[in-house]
Length: 518
Ligand SMILES: NC(=O)c1ncn([C@@H]2O[C@H](COP(=O)(O)O)[C@@H](O)[C@H]2O)c1NC=O
Figure (cartoon, rainbow, N blue to C red):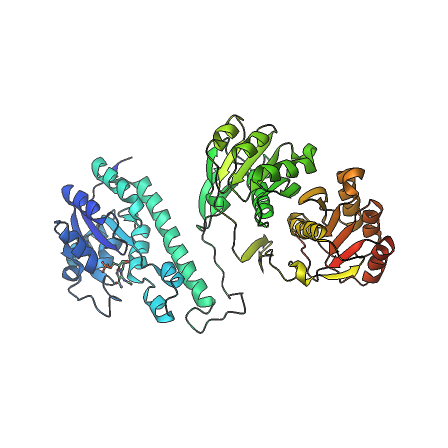
């Protein structure tokens, strides 16, 4: 595809990274430069000739920089469609020279807000002239190339060597430019809607406008099923979407869903913890003195289901843990890091995907799409009221001893990661039987007991993510030999449930908080 030569460039950048080299490269290629205030000064200091924008507009930069490039002599030069004779003729009549390249990056609005600046300071960092030039150049991509990030300066140099950008390249740059200004406007609009400027329409945590600016990270081979297309997007805040893959086949859609669930489960615990996930549900969660111990105990919960599982830990993977994992067919391992030698051990398994992803996701808001819109809620963080054992109420049996209380606390934390209706049996800081995703609680109790087996159910403790509507569920746990139960309480028939525990001499605590997870 043919290139369009670059003869004249408009450069106006807040972030001056790489500016001097870019200016030198443009000058060396015979490009004449027009530039704003401090951008022009930086270019000049680098020894490159530059025309101040005031010389083009015949108007001084004014109002503390609020007006610099907002002038027809600038915008006509950007917006003229040089494919049209009429536009070229009008420019000549008006004495306006066209631009072939616009290099702009915007005032750091998001960073200014994050710095805790005053509303006035934030407002001052809303770039007006910059987005106008970016949008104009992007619209006129048949004639103009638009560059919005120092990351793309290498592409400019390559284009100079090639005689200019091709139309396809200018189209791609235009798409990036519109994505850039769209994300910028989302940040500004959200800030206003949240009351950042001092008189927004915020209603508690819920601003009147919520925007999302997502960048595609990857096109995935397929979605939940092979006939569904799929892609991965990132909102730029890190987390799993920004994980570094150290080894293995491409991540699939289901791998991401399960890995997200695994991270949620592992990071709920303070001690070294491992969660093994299948189909977004845990088949083992455990804490330990180290990750190897936690993994061995999580795996022991349900070795049959752990085959082909996704494993997350909240600490770096040790060589000892890696050796254990390598013995079992595993789809994904995700961790904040890997101790020396651990990746090498895991790499021995050709198909395992090894991910390094920064720590816990501490976003306080989560959004789920529904038909025609979205639901937003505060995240169910592990420090909800009722998560601390000191707030629990003993409603049946003897007060738990220290070890039993620790097991109950572990079970109560771990059950949050299990899809409702959730019942989790635990012993010694490890799940031993999990009943998940059933449409009634009694079936979840049955499943948890069955998965644990007679020996492990006896003497274990149980957590229920929500109250027992009837005494039938807890009775199954009691009959299986569960010695203590923690549940939110609050059912109309709490007295029947409590009476069942009381009659069996089983300790029961209520937390007052439930942890549904759908
Ligand atoms: N008002 C204007 O006409 C205007 N024109 C360009 N800017 C911005 O001014 C910045 C560069 O200014 P300087 O070259 O003075 O550092 C860029 O981030 C650019 O987006 C403007 N500033 C804000 O709106």
